Length: 409
Image (cartoon, rainbow, N blue to C red):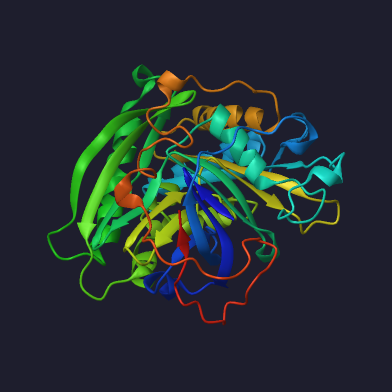
């Protein structure tokens, strides 16, 4: 299954790593790791329903011990990384680099395997969609989503505030975030400069696949409130040139510029040298594509949790946090920014924060609300109901014919 706002997709039909499939037919969930692995899953049954409230007791999400989180880089190592990036900037190697760390905590064993959902990874396993319900209540986000494909190593719950790519026919749009503070009054000149720098990078990325002269910036450095912090958000828009599809769009724009740096090639090289753990779906792309209508919405995979079950000690929950480093960066301040970004989300996932974010402050993107996910213009194409199971436990190899038919309710 997959869930994006009020859209719920079940009845798995195909799984592939071929981005060209997104130009074919059907409704697809997409999970693209920062490091290059891509999983595209086509579902036959797509419906609208409010996200259920978190389940109480053992049937609900049981997160890690809040004291068990460890970081791939401690404070001293992270601050050394910031100083190294500033040295690279001083020599002209790069202008900006997004430096990230991955936090990890073991998941507790399930105390009552009988209450695990029938289509989870296995009886007794933690259910990533249950974590998604907790996040929707405690940290609602405009691009929240869950993708649960345990047989394919994909169990992701995101509370992303950032748009990577939105498509409406040939029109493509990106919403890079650069600049994070507790309040709008706390933004620094460095935040605005960094945002403008990344907007220029995204303009160049989209310009590689968009018609000449069509790339515009409708909004620059808009202040956007989110739970516990505020961001500077810009909008970059263009019109794809004829013949440009998803493979070409990803080749031009992925990984997202806001989580790499500028120039992107130099930033990626430095990230590879300094970071000590793979980012996985963190800083990748997570979302949906409706190939029948030519519409899509993919988030940048920030504020994102994922389950890793391929460890001898048992499954762990992972979460990424990072900050954009420029010449004006202060090492202690950048570490503090990663702490700010992680604090609320880790508290929610570990059960330390159980309250709901005030409805009046949700900005129209609470779970199940009408918004970018919920408007009628985003409704997938209605098609006849297909025969076949709706369980996610029955899986189809990528090579089987997809057909494109699906149920929409």
